[in-house]
Length: 445
Ligand SMILES: [Zn+2]
Image 1 (spheres, rainbow, N blue to C red):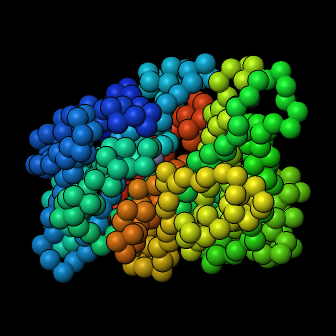
Image 2 (cartoon, rainbow, N blue to C red):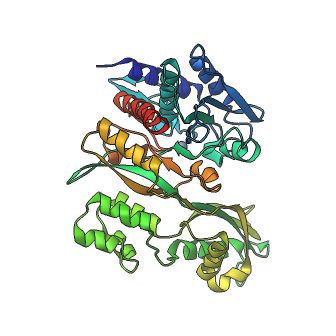
Image 3 (cartoon, helix red, strand yellow):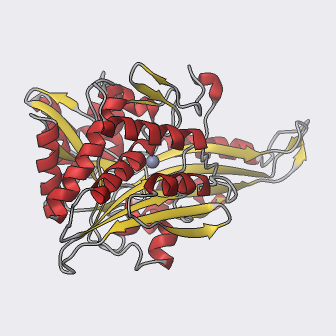
């Protein structure tokens, strides 16, 4: 049976999907102002006033708040992003921006990343505003631009330029809360940290010449091929973080496997032969700084020996690994070839971690087990980046959560993030909206 919370969440999600705030990474993409307008319409008549923050033409974020009565009580931000990543429509079974609702499933880009949460957080905030809730603490709803391209026009802009507007003690944003079955019941991930995105451009120089006489020439593409292979084969030593240990414990894997996955000397070898490919990739990424050469540009014409090739590498550093250590790893990986390249660093970020033992996590534990009886929360680390890092960098604990039903199996989720046929069931929307509302009531009193 569909109730008002589910209907409101579903319809707002569909509106945000249809707005298609696609962020290509170009400053003039995204156009989140469109969805800010939609949210302002959504909040109209609730007594909430909306603040708009523009970082560049069309790039807009929205904030609304329910002020608490006690200035010493905590301030909680619920933060969602408004932008989505581009699609390749040919891989989709349905129009990615039509927001079709079929048999209790909403289809479309952003359905799980993360317009589902952006809309359910708004629904909870509006319901609280319309009720007679008079909290001690302050609830702040923040809908931001530009998460998918680094956040500089959204959360980055707000934390740097509008610190008063986003002053808080805790943040909750994406992602987590998809039930993972284990022998003792479903486990719900709370994302407490993320790796540091370190993107590097490696420029390989050569000497131009005629392609008809290749012997003993200095061909930048041939050198680049070796560079790519060395980076792909590079295996820095594993580091076992506490969050990984606790996550593996929470999954209740067979004891031998759990032990191997938390042993720095065996984790890679174990991941190499695991049948469960998703767990293998996760185990590797959560215990290593990873190197993925993903883009190459070079050469000019088929009969010209190229003198310049650029390789772009997506490097994700474990929390605690500095950008300087990443550069040292590149030097180690390339060995003698390191002298023949220049390394540029378009993005140099450190990973971030928040503690799992905080009053807010206790509140998440209470509200999630009430709404999903028998489930337990476990800490996890995100291998991708989120806007949490802007707040963690200021020492503010920030978590990724949400609450999903079991209708779409958890194994489907990694395929849907930035993938084809992204979709969410409306029961999950209902659960998330109820969870945000319960969290605010529990934590802000
Ligand atoms: Zn996202």
